[in-house]
Length: 219
Figure 1 (tube, rainbow, N blue to C red):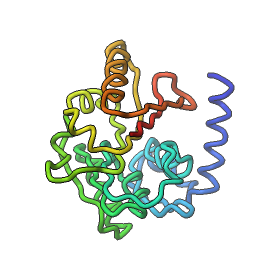
Figure 2: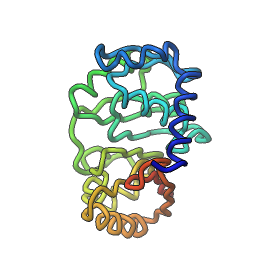
Figure 3: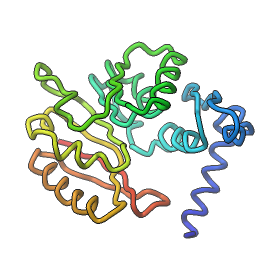
């Protein structure tokens, strides 16, 4: 393991200890789940496993998508909403959040976390998304932000979307995955399509995994 990764994990443990209430109960998730955790200045969430804890830390505390400086937004789309970390994070500055998640376990926690937060401006789409055309309505002209993090499915979703649909989005953020040669080839195609749609693509590395990076695409 690289020294940089070791330092990152150690600092992450320190962050979790200082920012998660009842952090000492996290190992219990192996046997008992879900469990509730309050996060300093970031609300409270039900988590189902250790990876949920890690995701909450990355999104809410590390600001891995770099949106802390975002001002008021109108409509935000969250594809790969999981337990609702990003949807709830952005709901305080958005008029409306469209939260997409189809996994039944994730969907259950997503709904419970929204109820727990008493947030009213999140709309859940409980379907597997294959193209943005199925979400973006013909009558609406623009969407401020699209967050997409779905373990490689970002490529078919974005590549299968019509150019006219992509041009309705002002900014995209999320993860890009390079788990195999096809994903690497899809990335090349996606870069071209985003450029043709008027986006400027910016990527930055994952602190641990070389096969994953974060991205922002702005028009």
